[in-house]
Amino acid sequence: MDNHNSILTLSQLSVGYKNGQEKNVLMENLNLGIPKGKFIALLGANGVGKSTLIRTIANLQKPLAGNILLKGKNIIEYDRKKFAQEVSLVLTDRIQGGNLNVRELVEMGRYPHTNWTGKLQFNDHEKVEEAIHLCAINYLKDANIFEISDGQLQKAMIARALAQDGDLMLLDEPTVHLDANNRFAVMELLRKLVDETKKSLLISTHQVEMAIKMSDELWLANCGENIKSGTPQELIKAKEIERAFPFLQKLNN
Amino acid sequence: MLSISLGSVVIPFGEILDILLGNGLKDSAKYHIIYSYRLPKALTSMFAGAALGFAGLQMQTLFRNPLAGPFVLGISSGASLGVALLVLLGIGVNGALAYWGMAIASIIGSSAVLLLVVLVSVRLKDSMSLLLVGLMFGAFTSAIVSIMQYFSTAEDIQNFLFWTFGATGNLSWEELQIFIPVIIIGILLGYWQAKPLNALLMGENYAQSMGLRIQYVRLFLVISTSILAGIVTAFCGPIAFLGLAVPHISRIIFKTSNHFILVPATLLLGACLLLICDLIAQLPGIDLILPINAVTSLFGAPVVIWLILRRKNISKHFG
Image (cartoon, rainbow over all chains, first blue to last red; front, top):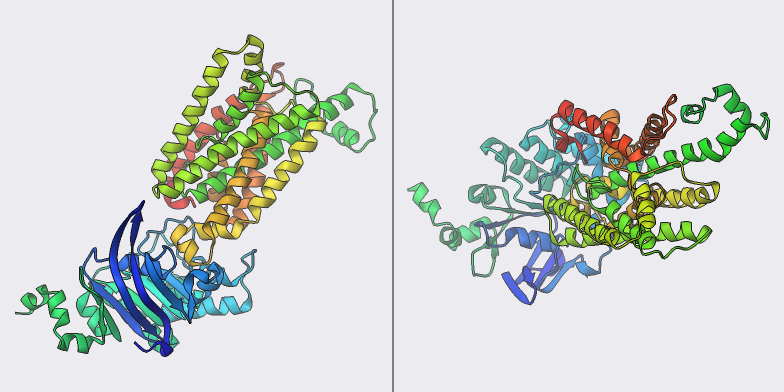
């Protein structure tokens, strides 16, 4: 991977959990990069450590070994606020925060850009409106977040991450609670965002077909192996996808 | 105003204004009642109510739990333990030092429990278990207090028991000079965290991903809450329910989760509610004064139940 074009680089990275002295390593020796303006799908079955990797890159947990460089600087040296101005996140965590409407939720994305009073300036309002517009949720602006459907909520969460306006967006299983139509709508939206905003996107997913169709590059995670990276076409040619997801062939036969 | 006016001696509004503005007779009995009794009491209730309401709001948002509050999480019990150690072990200090002693003892007690709760909350991500842990801490400290009572003299126990009934009427002007500034400091510390509190509505992971330094914010909230809950408990005794109920009432009235609105709302509502409770406690026509703690529970519990029944789904609205 060419490091010069990468906004984020993983070098010799190991992720997992530490339990006292015991280390539970989920992924080891990762050397990967996220190029600017690309849509990357981290593809793998449940339990291979996709969410752990996303959480580690998001600076929510420490790597067991190795480094993560964001624009050439190690992420643990970043001030939280500065880091949040570069990287935004969508998790699978259920949010249960009170009487928020969709606009207020999206406005939360401006958090690292405002001062202690949290007051939005003209520029902030512009970014919020832009994010709402791009995600096509204008009609939801005043709806309370617990009145809207899961698909709508996911779009609102994406708009919030978009309003945070970093160059990199991380999304952990963005389609996980959604039905087939909404899964497609959300992935299509993410593709559009990458094309129109030139932000880089890393999502984790186990939706093989969707990942192949929408992403620029796959990171294929198989239990007990190193991640294989490449364009979907490369990985299909090398039969890697077949090997990782044997059921696909059975379905297609 | 009403609370200054009413009591076992009813003083009309007009006269109060006169007296407060300095037009009244300086040495009349009513002047005396107002200046050395009713006014300090009203001020105490206002500030104590505001402090407890705000402390409850901070706890509920920090722990993302609609049941959190200084009382439920054992913070008040911690403060009780501090005071009990002071009163029951007879480490009596006199004069102005005694007020400071009480205040500091109860703040230390409440922050100790709250710190333990926060330490546990770092390990447990589950807010339900956290609540149980808080309750256990409360039970634990109460048990220690009971043991100490068992070995104390009758007089010390009586002092302590009166303290646990809660009272807003025992504060002198000297004590208020400590009480009010400390509460203002606690409120300012907490209000400074209004923006992080808003981010915490989305949970700690999201809050961190938006640039919030969680350890730092937690620490500030803990300090602010223990100052507020600790000082009120020290001077007025453990006052139940207010800290739990006020944030909910504020959210329902103002229909928002924005802490820049909720903070002033809880301060105002807390102040009003405790004034009203205080008024009920000293209802005109009755010569005796009810313990304030009994009043807040008697009227607070039904209010909370009614609110929950009306809302049905309070956990969606808390935040």
